[in-house]
Length: 268
Image (cartoon, rainbow, N blue to C red; front, side, top):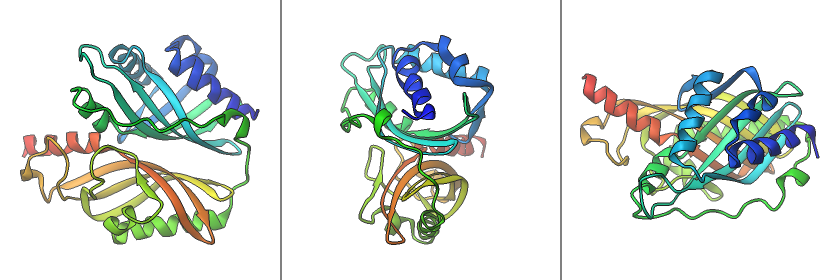
């Protein structure tokens, strides 16, 4: 097993699934940072956020669906799932994609987005999103693979196409928005800023910032928000063949966008 993958096995099982925060010193540096929903959390803030999540979902489990590794970089597509406290009968499944960097011993930084909007929509108990089957054994099969400039070029070309016509790019064959709902574009006049990107052979992962004007489609957001400037983070994993993206999964932070739009309306 690759050393970085072995660390992530402990992260996913001994830390997340067991809810044992005593192992964080073994897994994460003291200056570990988590970038999520447009915010950068230091170790203390991150620890508090995880404690709150474990308290709200005391039986929370993490399932890994996909993983890639290149040198000191790793990306993982996963789902978290569990039953929220105080909501009888409710079960929630919410996907996420994360990218990591480590120093050869412990994690240095994580960029992650999860479908918290879909998680909260499921907390009413009206529906439960399906749980995709987990990877049979990501620990044994994930190997260190050198990056490929051609793969990076293909992904950047797809991101340019996303900015040019987001509806067409997001509805293309092989593209999946890992979220509840109908996959609406949400933002129009899109610009795409690449915050992080790395490749591993024909695979790639990235974290991006999407900016545009609100086009509707988010529950709980008044139509008065239509046309307001909006920002939404996203993480993605992709596969490239013959110089083009053939498969891509993306998780968008609709949860954060909802809160920023509500705040903009409230403050005028």
